[in-house]
Image (cartoon, rainbow, N blue to C red; front, side, top):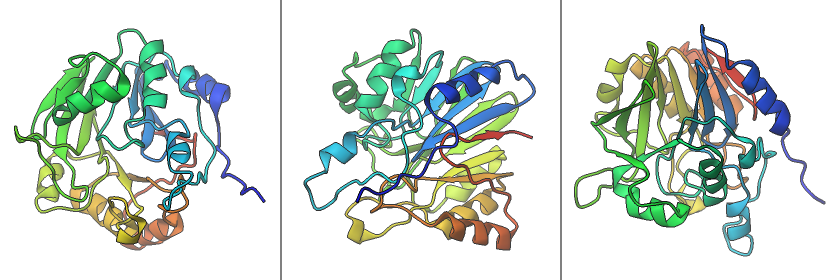
Length: 283
C-alpha cells in the first residue's frame, strides 16, 4: 500500500499566484518553505531561491540501495514554474542542496539570474549544472557579496567537518542574507562548532532557518543540528524568530517537529513552524 504523502499548504500554480500577489508588498519580506532546506524569499519584488530541491532525483538514484530516499511530503512546486528569480543559492554540493533537475530549468527560465555558491565548489557545480565555470558567483566564509542590493555574508558550516579546499575556502557554507535592514541566517547543513555563536551574534539575526534532523551515524549521511541544538543556537545568537527545516522529506532522515516546538516554548525562543508551501511574513 502506497504511503500517503504529507500535503503542501499551497503548491504549483496556486503557490506562484500567491507569490505574485505579494510582489508589491514593500513593508515586509515574505518567505515560503519549499521543503527540505529550500525557501523562496521575496522582498520588494526581488525573489531569492535558497537551496531548492524540487525533484525526485535522489529517490530515483537510491531506489535499489540500502539507503532508499523515500519521499514523505508532496513536491511543493515544479521548478519550471519559478519565474522572475533574481538570485539562487547552493550552500554545498549534496544533491538536496545542488540538484541539477531543479537548477537547470530554474537557470534556463530566469534570464539574468545570479547563482551564489561556495567558491570551493566551482568546478563541481559547473559540471553538475552544465553551466560555464565562471558563471556562478563564488563566496568564501568571512567574505561578503552584494547582488541586487542584497548582501550575502559567508558563514562556515560543519557537515560533519569544516572542510576546506587547498585555498582555504569552505566546501560547506551558510549565508547571512542582509537586505533593507533585515538579516536572515540560512545555515545550510551544519553541526554546532566552536566560535559559531560569536560569528553570528553581531548580525542580530531577524530570522534563522535551521535544520533539525540531527546527526545519527546509522543513517550513513552527514548530520545536522537536532531540535534542541537548533533552538539553543537560535537563542544564543539572539534570533528574533527561528524556522526549522530539513525534515519531513525523506523517511530515513527526518525529525519530529513537535519536539522542536516543545523545546522552543520551554526556552522562550520565538519560532514558526511552516508546512510545505506555507508563508512567513516579517513583522
